[in-house]
Length: 411
Ligand code: HEM
Image (cartoon, rainbow, N blue to C red):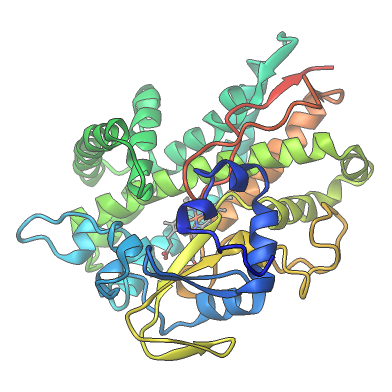
């Protein structure tokens, strides 16, 4: 085994068939052989041990902006967006890739406004889930991804933002296009989609900012234009890019959380039975899905100073990818890590990352998943997989873990 070569970066993504089907065989082996792995071709470290991943994402001095990565960090630097003359960094990239002081200046008020919207949005989520279920009641079998998991997060974030209902299908198309910005291995066709979607979304958001400034409504666009009018130092370009980051960041990820959860519960009837016997554990169920099958595989940081990770030196400017998926199955932290156990006592998973960049949408994703799962099983108590022996077909977007299809029968 020692003679076996270590995987390259592509072999650590769902673009590789072995990783797609058996990611934990690859990650477990890497964690035990080389937990602080330097992938030279991509110019990055790749961490798989829970303690290292947690310490890295929680380190508030680490950088996030790929611009600060050394030239050799080719993987990180492929993420760099082209900026037009006169545009500042904060106008060309969302909080996802910004460092302080811009990160804190934009994230703090946005997070406050978003959390307030989420806190009063429960009824909307319930309504949206119920409407999606109403469309399914007379159908004996359906693809749960296309009919339930995909539309719900888009509709929810659209309502929070204040997007017009009649523009929803365009939104789906645009957000699918824009998410290709996260795909460093995108094809020419995906790049075309990205380039078509991005200006369309920008135009629509420009129009929304204008309309809400003139006539505020009960939505996040209005919250942010009001704060801006009250003196919050944030430009229209910054608002546009960050509000669209909510749309893009929230859609596919939450879709995958719901899809992964339903599949796991249907594949593990004993765990589903525990939920049915005690619906009060829905919170624990969603947390165990986030640990066991996190929708986002990795996140990244750039070392802001020379550091040591588990005894390995990493220099300032070097890129560090952290495997959230690998950390979540580290046997040093989780007993029987490969067992899906909704009543597990200790599950401090890292599915939402950590530190200053911890997912801003986590409370929303959790709420949506909890409501979607409960209501689906209430409405379809005898739900079954159409073919329980069929291997799952995973999407091939790097670093996301989600199903292409989830074919189910009403019972
Ligand atoms: C299950 C669903 C989701 C998962 C697994 C997920 C995962 C993540 C992860 C791993 C990060 C990077 C954290 C880090 O580097 O430490 C992140 C950041 C982010 N997420 Fe999520 N996310 C989800 C849902 C959402 C939703 C619903 C939204 C929007 C409403 C959202 C918006 C964002 C944004 C804007 C960031 C950047 C935050 C920053 O850098 O300050 N995500 N998410």
